[in-house]
Length: 367
Ligand code: GDP
Image (tube, rainbow, N blue to C red):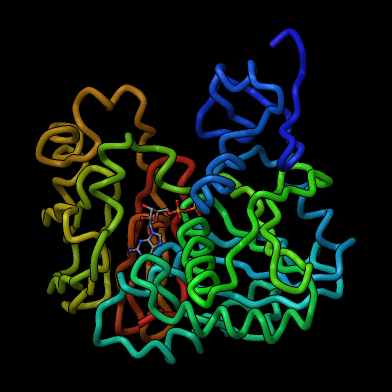
């Protein structure tokens, strides 16, 4: 662009190159008298929030802005990738503002799990991570489960203030907001999306009935997420779409599991026992001997051990090994964005392998 335009809706700088990024507008939009970015366009005409992502620096600016506001913050995480979708350090930016923590995609967890147990778990983990939310919820934005409850809680806690919705990309923030919009407009309180204040940068303000706003912030890209290391096609395989069916493996010491070619688990010592794998039902789990595992991977990554596919291998990072000693009962070994393995007994030594750049960690069992 020779000339810089801004969106009359949110004020962002308009660009015509990257559809997924902030400020995108189709080139034809530049010929119009008033220029509006695609994200604002969709909200205005379809009452629909579209997700866009932005750089860390821009996101920091938005976070910094939060401490200057007097608002309720709603933080969304993906319960399937709790740690990977956590926004670290948010608590340092919120100032005196209250926070509600919402775990989305509860529909993915096995039905046998009691939501309240998961909520208790989220409260403990949040505290460990330095966040002190007023309340914690589990929802399925996709299916609409518990969205009404959250909508009511938001209205109660906001106490006449603005609401900022924050979350990293792919947690389902847009789906969640769109659900909330439906809930609200279902009661005849239709959102007046024709009006854009155009005062703020990079954020969309959705007017609420009392003159305050629900504010959608762009999602931050969390570079450690598995999603950034696989193709769109493979992402479909590793992202569960429905309830995950835990798979139990009875393993002897010296056995290895491969999760496609994306991750690996070695059972080093601790005596024969069962390991419960929580992954997308479409991921192929391959059991083998630890002694042969390196060789097998070398030979078969891309075919028997896929994704990644053969033609993606060149760009796929090497698997990095990390050893863990499990000291407590019911511990999860988390392969960020891919799933987790629950170990029931303490005194187990294992190794977890993930692509370089992706996180592996242990945590108190979610389930
Ligand atoms: P955003 O980047 O945070 O705005 O996320 P989106 O709303 O675009 O959702 C990201 C992905 O998660 C999409 O594939 C959604 O279909 C999916 N998704 C969103 N909410 C849910 C949910 O409640 N359950 C499940 N299983 N998937 C969801």
